[in-house]
Image (cartoon, rainbow, N blue to C red; front, side):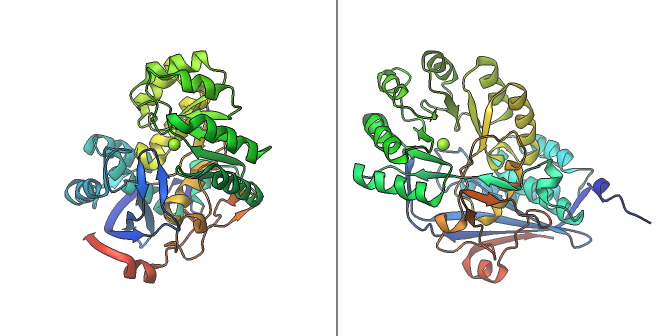
Length: 379
Ligand SMILES: [Mg+2]
């Protein structure tokens, strides 16, 4: 008898094991919303009755601001609500699990995504196919962009950009703030030569103050990312009307409903998709279809993930409509040591989509055990 593995979509989670680890970035990450010197990360592993397993990662940061959910609030939501409610419950597919979680945990999509994404990984592993394949991905390599934080002197910035260019990155993103945006962008574009440069304001401009953005318009940026606060969609749409540089939204692209509004208002020409922020792969794919039908450009954003979250992102990024270079660099760019056994490497500005079962990477469980700060098990 030949099993039709593609139909083995059902999920019944028999065991969930969650840990929090402290990841040490290779160097502190500086953006308009703050500096990150240590990155606590929640990782979750689930198992079904047959011993199939999957990994998920929570993208929340330790403090609110970028996201409303934090590491602690997500941990609590997982322990007190999400983990017990999915335990031993049967779902016919990852999409059905995602729908259930959207109803059961509507205010904590970031926490819910941890379980949802682990379930996708588990189903793909059980079917003996890559998550990329299960999600409908077609590409085996993802173009990668480099992000350079705030706080560099012009000559340091130029050196960083030149180094990124030599390393083969396909796009350079600089973090900017209003006072220095123009000089930073001009310096970066000069040093980047033929590589596209993007300016990410992380919502640091005020909708009342568009003069510096008009100046930026003439600088030759590939796009301007998230100039205004996340809820200022009208202002973004108005700005897009008056600039020739495309506006991209990241912080604003936080839910399916908001993304619908952005598309209706023509508030941006590009969006950053982060499955761990949207509630998981299922919602991310809905957003993907919507945005693609509306002609928006898309890329997969980064949340300083470990190799687990990054492998999830690579699988999703393999869908052909993610037509802009992603924010995902190689493991070594971020961490003194990653939690996965084989670090994700970059070749000529591209990272290979792991071809193994599921997310295609294995966690170094011995190292994980040593790095674990707290642990919660439901079985
Ligand atoms: Mg951004």
